Length: 288
Ligand SMILES: Cc1cc2nc3c(=O)[nH]c(=O)nc-3n(C[C@H](O)[C@H](O)[C@H](O)COP(=O)(O)OP(=O)(O)OC[C@H]3O[C@@H](n4cnc5c(N)ncnc54)[C@H](O)[C@@H]3O)c2cc1C
Figure 1 (tube, rainbow, N blue to C red):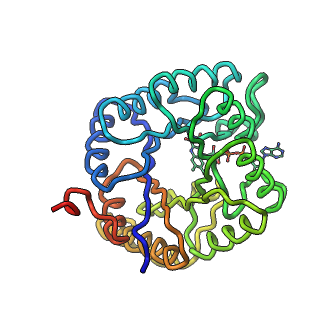
Figure 2: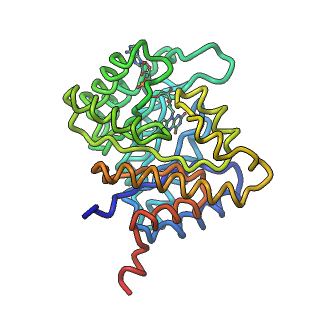
């Protein structure tokens, strides 16, 4: 029998108070699904340092959820990054999603900050020196756009795990085969750490096409067909998003995948619907 999967949810720090109040409602609605952790992203170039810190600290203090704080290397010295991580350790945050980050748009590509951590592997090693954090890193089933080859990308993932990361969470992808082939390549490379698929339920197809071009994820032709003519029909797009993401997860579960990380975009309904379809029931219901 297929096991009920373990899940985690990802959120971004909202820009204003109204957004933050909505995020709090979202967290309350998703908490009963029992996520292993809830992660909060770190805005491009460290732009949300304060907000990310405030939200993960509040999650730790006021909810029963385990927060994971994303952290990037961009635009800061090692000392500045370490200071953020020490602050989190002091506030009881024990899980960091350690990332290189990206160059600001139009700046001509990533280059390390002078005196900063150069990449995810260096940041992971730095965090290990600060505290016994649980550390997740990024992985790219279709290879990172900056990597010279799939083999170089796999070596890079190994470096991050060898530096002390506990698991990798993948960039989103839309075909189960893409993940399954990547999982095989990880196993062949001797990687034993969990590789957790990152699942993005797609409602805004146009935006996903734009974003995917930058992050190296392929958007399959069947997905374009699925969303064709739905630009003015957000309700139907929601239903399509829930069923498509559920089918992807079910296909992966049939191949033994037991963990999923959901990119929620701060909206609870889709993540909740998919969880239910995968057999993850709210704890209150399960106890009733
Ligand atoms: C689960 C997840 C969460 C994310 N959350 C955020 C977030 O909160 N904020 C944000 O800004 N971004 C986030 N990102 C995006 C991420 O910052 C970008 O994808 C970034 O381009 C790569 O980060 P990384 O840590 O995976 O990079 P790294 O693994 O450090 O490097 C990426 C690529 O750079 C090259 N590279 C690195 N080191 C070397 C080396 N020594 N020699 C040669 N080549 C090298 C390799 O090709 C490698 O594949 C997230 C990504 C994922 C998958």
